[in-house]
Image 1 (tube, rainbow, N blue to C red):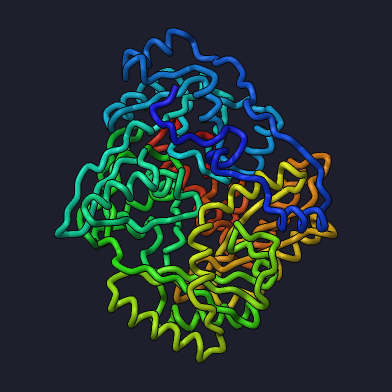
Image 2 (cartoon, helix red, strand yellow; image 1 turned 180 degrees about the vertical axis):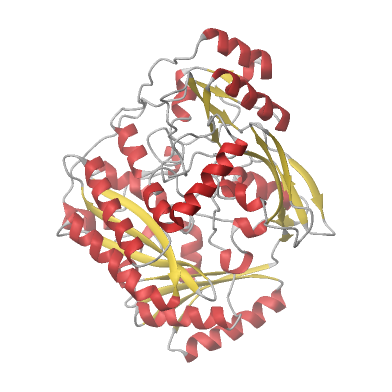
Length: 525
């Protein structure tokens, strides 16, 4: 069925073996706030029969090999949609009506180009698939008007193509999952240093196609800033973009593919900046009397050029329930707001920067909590998505959303989104927030919202998502900082870039994918 044993569950996040029941402390908190209402998920939802003409299947098999064209129910189930809350709610209810008709697994760039040419000839929609971690509806392509839907599963494209230890770059294929890429680079004493919460399952191609931002972005940068060169296959030809570390040769066309979510082309290789594996890692905890004071400290560090490798700040509510430490949810958290500051690199450099940053934070009123909070955060940094499944199991609707704005607009955005969610979802709603990424000019806000699940959770989610998105737009912030557009954010993306911006996207689409086979219905308003 699969060449990759590292598969996520079709109606849950990640590996069920890695998930566990809610800790007693968390269960008690949830029971107090919402009550417990067991809502078991359909563990293996059925998929409708594939609708692809057998002759087309034969043509695909001739193209890339029969063993790389899969139509069995299990493979199609695992390549249906992503992991947004609506994706999971539908799967948990047993509804996988938009399963792909076939899963095709190209082995290299030429295979991808051949599949795209075949799809154009036979009116087949193509959905590029990396790790399946998308949380904004970016893997649910429009079926109407097409003879079928193919999942273009890049799982076979997992090579480290080149390492340039002089220039400190590496060229990676798109199907590599985060841990696989880091393991290959580690053999050379190198690392990428990109660790989003989805790290264990997300792919290199997905990082590029969604402008991913990892937890170490303060020190290592966003993924799009790491990409120095890329190759993509489009229905109208090959693109090789990025000739030098910097260039004044017109607009940077790499940016057309970075963040394009598979609608303009399929990224088949990226060359990225790499760095030496850190000799020392130290993560500290700091406590702040208020969210505003902690945010002001982050701004001070950013604008002084003193950012650590990792920096994040939980608001009072998130700190109180220990969301920054997922294995301790519901246990008594610290008062005020918890900040995590992580330092990585050579020992002398880490010691010097840690000391300088610590002096600034202490001078601004922060309380040094030592390394224990940082160690706890590191140990649980990839576990938070499992909590959503555990809470859905007991009738609690959970969603996360994120945005970014200027420092001067931070309070307006923060209070506006919280108020919108609380008003829409009603009494008892819990809204938590943390600052997840920091820049000289602003920062991102990452919200987690929990409410008692209603009779129609999809409608409930839609109303809450709309309210939050309208509040984000009203505050003049971006509709997404790192989750991408997908289908969930299209309406507000159109508002953000305006009619001329939408027209530009459509013109690029018409040039690179004139028949519209690539991920139809995604990204472009």
